[in-house]
Image (tube, rainbow over all chains, first blue to last red; front, side, top):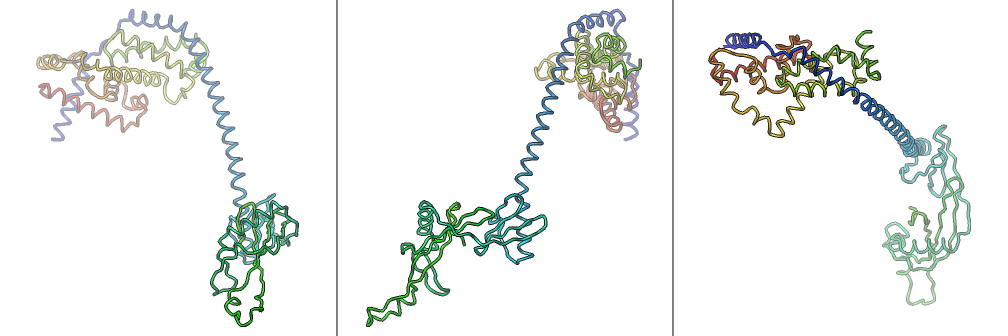
Length: 236
Length: 177
């Protein structure tokens, strides 16, 4: 079958080979060619101009793309660099001080990572892994800052469900008197926190008050809340 | 001046491009004529081929002979023309009824170019190209591969597929092998 097919293909080849293809006469070819050369006189300049324009626009496009790529690289570097600083800071804090810090709590400034931890400002130089700890400076917050901080505290869940000691039931101290408002300024990061102290009475004292002694007074305690005004939240 | 130098010069020099036309016009026209079997159409498509070649002359890298590059452009011009014809539905009308005419000629054993051309036209464009270049332009399969920018192996496959398809079409019209 295959052999028969091959023979038939060979026969097909022979049939086509036996066909004489048509040829144009030399006169026709010359005439067509001359017509084309006449056309070429007009078209050559046009096409050359088109090519030059195309080349120029390609060049512009190439420049545009290069500039775009450079800008994109710079932009991505600017965005990526702080992330790497944060990562290096978190690692340095964990390995040297044993602190576990979330990346979102770390800020970067002039190539160093800064984190506020236990009311201290820890600055990590990621190049030499040098760690510096600073205490905050007390400052007098403005009236606007005070009002905002108190409002944040009063609206917070921490004040509404305040637990003084472990195992105690939560109490709402959000409407209690404000005892003091202090400002804390962290020198390296320039971050400000406002400390708001609210008065409260421990639940255990309320229950143990004897009705037989109406003049006995419950001790007045203060609950401290550190407010980050920029974020609008209480610092954990 | 060798071919590469002439081509380089022709990108900016009309005289040099005229020289290219002098050298290659006949072969390109001949190839297109064998594909289309229509003098006016061949003239138009040859003009289009050379104008397109002028437009993209600076993309010719000299990896294959310049005539192969021109024949590739010519092949594209023909294929684009036929595609347009098919889209405009003129192609079918133009070649309607040619098979019954061919059959009677085949029975007499008189297979001339007009008949075989009508059958070749029913093949795919790539098969038409390969058959025309091999049989009527006497190009080797290696050269055809360079012209159509296929590997030699793929070109061989197209060649045998084209012959099988052609044989089938002839048999369908009653030709006895």
